[in-house]
Figure 1 (cartoon, rainbow, N blue to C red):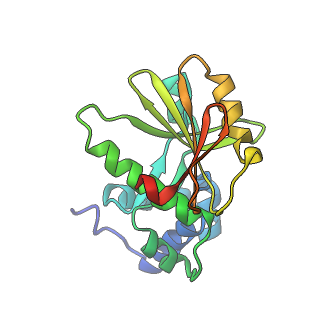
Figure 2 (cartoon, helix red, strand yellow; figure 1 turned 60 degrees about the vertical axis):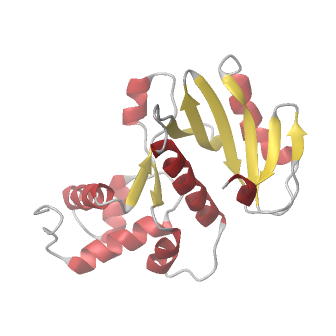
Length: 199
């Protein structure tokens, strides 16, 4: 509790919170974040740890077959309260990252209700292919892409299909969550589902 109250400069802390909320769904580069906010990297690290320990900040790790590498790859940043995240960022209109933020919170709530909790991760290659969420459970994977669009098509499955091909022996399939009403197959093993139907 003492650590949580040890914030010497509240304006710096607020700027860091806002910078995080403007980066929802993005890779977290702690050095860039500290520079943009104008605070030392050590202070940024301490503030980020406090935000995570107090259940405000979510750092989502990257999927890698090598579990040690998951610890060294940059996490993606999310906020535990999407509405508060929008407010802190000064945004009045939701964007795609806010839908992602809603989904990750629902996934984490589901994870934490399991007796044997799965891991919730993301996947990204050096060439920029990315899958928003990867659920790893009992040696199998499920890939999830989030699209803030009412209509989705085959082209929206490009990165999912790359992931499915890469991990064909352990992946069960892919899901594209969208804001429309239709439930349909976009590819042989990729299902489009309205996000509100799942959560």
